[in-house]
Amino acid sequence: MPEHHDPVPPFKLRQPAHPEEADDSIADHALTEDEREQVEETQPPRALVLHESIRRQGEEELARPSMALAWSALAAGLSMGFSLLARALLRSHLDDVPGGFLIENLGYTLGFVIVILGRQQLFTENTMTAVLPLLSSPRLAVLGRLLRLWLVVLAGNLLGVAIFAGLLAHTGMVDAGLRPSLQAICEEVMKNTPGQMFGKGIFSGWLIATMIWMVPAAPRLKLPIIVMMTYLIAIGGFTHVVVGSCEVLYLVWQGQLDLSSYALEFALPTLAGNVVGGSFIFALISHVQVRSEHGREGDG
Image (cartoon, rainbow, N blue to C red; front, side, top):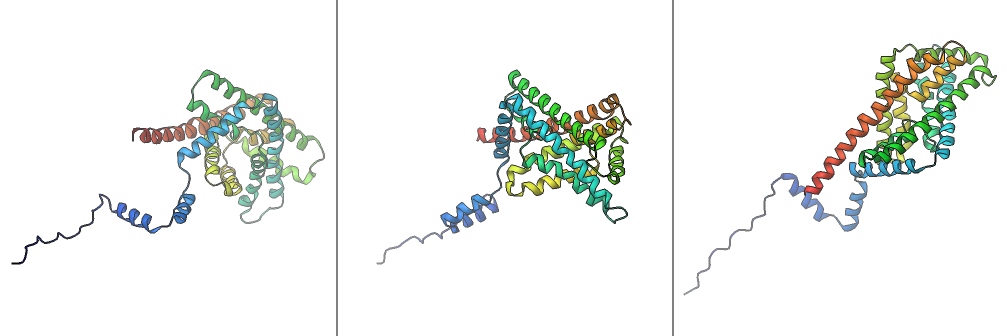
């Protein structure tokens, strides 16, 4: 009599809890080891990686000697004057040209390109990276180093743009035909009220901080990122304490504005806006985002 065998139960695949789990598993098994490495290389860096990269840059900036910071900041201030000069040169050749405003403001990006690619010290750029070490380790010693960095860099930048504006106003380094364009650009800045200087300064600081965050994620696109973000500042009419100081101090050198008006109506509200937008809003939000992600990983 033949033995009786229980029927073999049909083979069943485990059903994943989420449909995407099955797709990831199948794709992962189908890839070779080299292909898996290629996938990893093409993944964008996580926010935590970007945060750490920028934090380390900030630590390096905080550790630099004051004299080195001062000379680099002075060079940056002089370089930023080319944002005003390039914009004026383009405007002088774009009278009645359709879209001339959009072309002219490409000149605004030149100073930023020189300073950032040249690794010079610019307030709202290098100084914003130094906020992350303070947020990561909030100690009085770190705060003191941050304030030292801010004061030295800002003073050097403003001295540099003041010298550049003086050269434009009182030397023959530019043709007389360029002066109407310079004058018009500089007068446009002072049409803003102090409240508008502050509000537009927030957007400017935020965009610069966004640029700092984006560059480590796409280092090969550094130049286009710099141009794109600073061009947006230009066409938006947002205020930047260093570039705007070159424009307003040109009016001071011309005797059309006094230093108290420069400080109270432009410099102080714009500086406050840049710091709020770049440091307190963007840096704080980015830091909290990363800390939250890191906290979830620690719990897991």
